[in-house]
Length: 272
Ligand code: RET
Image 1 (cartoon, rainbow, N blue to C red):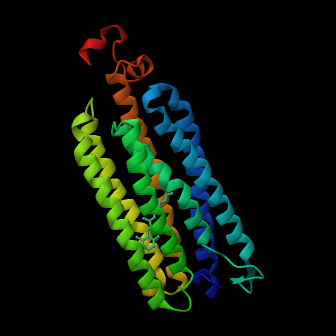
Image 2 (tube, rainbow, N blue to C red):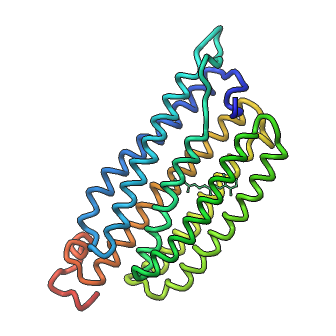
């Protein structure tokens, strides 16, 4: 009974909304997996790991959503016109564990398109991953209290937020420092990536806090909606933008498949 999802009965509309949201999430990640896989050949080897990491994120997050959707439909059954909890419970905790893998991938792909050298990538990624794991582990512990103790939820959430702010600070300063190295107009795209991250990543703590401000069956729908918007923005749309940046930067170092894809004259590389 760790999550508030298990506390309520759901109307058919509420139940199906959540089922459809989770299933849509699966579809979006699978479709994006194919897209990133196909586009990876347009990306120069120097940036290709960034696109490969998007593929890994799609598989990892897509699978967790398959399991979330299955758990949702297994946990509840229609009885007397409403969906009621059965013998097993629904759990959001799997998401947090999954972030231990996906967030390091998302941060590393950013460092790659920011044109950092190998050594700097390893150094920065290590710091960022430690902060991200600190954020996730404390958040995981906090969500275990969401039914019984809202104070504990808020305290662990506050500790997690310290890691989150530190992580965002490093992301922001890294983008500011490396923007000038970014070619072919991508120095403006990277700012859009930054704001997308700030928006999408901030939705997760809001979803975490739903038990504190909307402890109802509608709150559960809102929470799953927030998770879905956050997932698609922070992984799928983010991945598309990172791959776009990778292709444009590949073109500016003369990588022919990227030049062709952008409709540039391959024999006239010097103009780029
Ligand atoms: C928690 C706990 C409450 C405080 C904060 C949190 C932040 C979560 C974030 C999650 C990002 C997830 C992503 C997943 C991609 O697959 C842990 C909910 C600040 C920022 C980007």
